Length: 238
Image 1: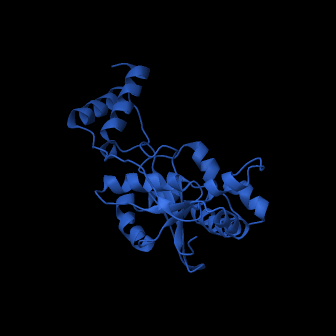
Image 2: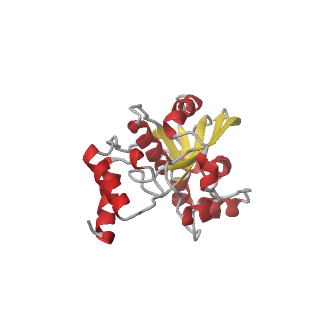
Image 3: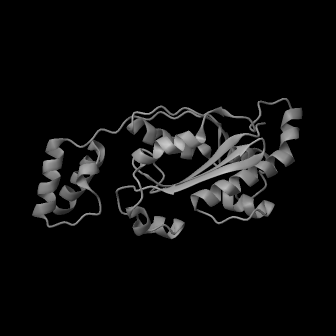
């Protein structure tokens, strides 16, 4: 078991790190079992939020408009992380978004991590749900769900509760402990910017069909631009 780590949690525009973007980062640093620092920020995703994300998180476009883009945030955030293991509830989800963002900025990001969801799935099989919200109710942990820093704080408390209840049992069984950091593995490819022909075609289609869009054409990747063009052609024609 480790008592020094950084617990991370992200809010994002969706569930796919290849297409979706980070909109909020929260992190809690724990050293020798004590919280020694916290870090949080909004992130400008350069796109309009879907209503379902607004409803889920309470985060609105106006709050993100003045936020820094992820490229400007990563260096400071990685400094905060130092070389510590990551803790999270489904930690690979958060790691995958950070790894994708890092690769896009030509940065290296390799980590070990501990997953409270995996621990709960092993030892709390009788619970109807092992979501962070449900586990917090189970242990009486105060929790304001779906905001990054609040989720990170709650996950730290959850890890401590799970450790108190199950770590000795796992140690006695002589198993490779889920309470210890393991390598986090996610393959990410760098996004390539849209091509000049794509940009020209997209601008022509938008102008021809008098379309107002909620994204910046110049910030699209090649694959994103291709999907936007295909969607316009399918709906409006050439």
